[in-house]
Image (cartoon, rainbow, N blue to C red; front, side, top):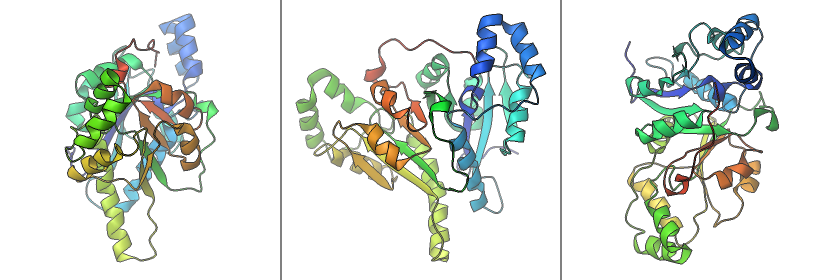
Amino acid sequence: MSVNGDETLVIGIASSALFDLTESNAVFEEQGEDAYRHFQEKNYETQLSPGIAFAFIKRLLTLNRLKADGPALVEVVVLSRNDPETGARVMRSIETHGLPMTRAVFMQGRSPFKFMPAFKMKLFLSANPDDVKEALERGYPAGRVVGQAGQLAADDPDDLDLRIAFDFDAVLADDSAEQIYAADGIDKFWEHEAQNQATPLPPGPMKDLLAAINRIQDLEDEQARANVDYRRHLFVALVTARNAPAHTRAIRTLKSWGLRVNDAFFLGGWEKSDVLAILKPHIFFDDQMTHLEGTSAVVPSVHVPFGVKNLAAQPAATSE
């Protein structure tokens, strides 16, 4: 059965984003591939602990309950640098955690993100900065999970909601406005955005992901219209350093795309982590590490290394 790109939100995830592989990576880096292979075989039945994106993926998959028949609303595919043999432990942990994920691509020592178009994927998550950077350069939507899973509070099993938060420039939109700020400063940026508030910005890496999320929210809207007691579970927030007068262009850009968010925080440079600690999204996408250094300690955070603010050297790659 082929993947329907319009009906199904397909996401690719590396095992380094789904699980905490600190111990496994240490074996690989300190003792080499043969020792790593033996370690994974020996610990096949030892369940891997949740990683940074685990709660996001788990809750995203529960949205399939909103549709009784036809293609699934959400599919998550493992995209791994492991070979099939060493990757078996990852699939076993997926099974023991009860995640309804059955598809995987294993390519020994190479990243399989190149297959994203074949699966019509709207997102690739990994802890490997080189893979994410190359995927974005090819025009594929990708992000690097940052921080340590152990820093974050345990997921609440009684809370069924899924909250997703996005920065705007260089994440949902492109970085053309940020280029004005970088070249000419904040005053010229405000002037430019006020003059162009009716002109939509071009799409950025995560625009199609938001569109797919909105389609699932449409189903919740239908449920709410049919049942006045229905409570929505999927929420999207915009958390941006923009403020007035630059906020108008962000709002009008989303409207021009036919997309929407439930909540918006126009912070004008105030600390995002203070807001996110209260909002508690299950994942937050931002293009600037200066913001994520604070947010990654309180919420699962993803660096989208796109645009002018990411022209500096990337961090060193990690093994998966």
